[in-house]
Image (cartoon, rainbow, N blue to C red; front, side, top):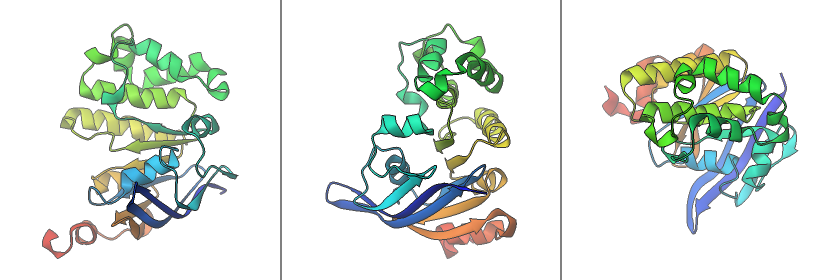
Length: 240
């Protein structure tokens, strides 16, 4: 299995404040990995660096055999590395169908825009039902479905999801998690940030525990510790 993403020694910060301190992660073709750990310890910063929204001070990011370290976000998306934004960042006055169709803006995504739109509708039937509504009229969960749908319209070679079920009701969380599982089953490589470790273990091949801007541990699904051991890693002994 060939290596799709290789991150080596990434150091990133905001201004003079360092956040990531030499992170190494990797992902192979067809693989899904999960990131978890305390809030504020660098998970989202890592994703922003992968998407070109933050320029690494040191280290390298190689995607599909090409060095994309510091590349512009549009270049990275065109290469197929796509991050679904939080649903509340969608353009509220645009229609649902219009938003999806405009998301297929890269040459590789435009080749089968109609077929890709049909796949998104099958994945999220609610978006088909609400195709003529404005995005701002959707519920929080529906806006998150739209965000993931837009990312899928970009024909991702690697899809990044940053806490896609955050703040949603249990029912909507279940619907979104089922849809994400379907995406993974179709062979789309994934990087998913979630606090629900059990969900990540069911969805992904490996987990990275991110603490204090570093990879504190790497967990293989086939040899994963039990739930309590993972909670101890995450929270310390107070998890008992």
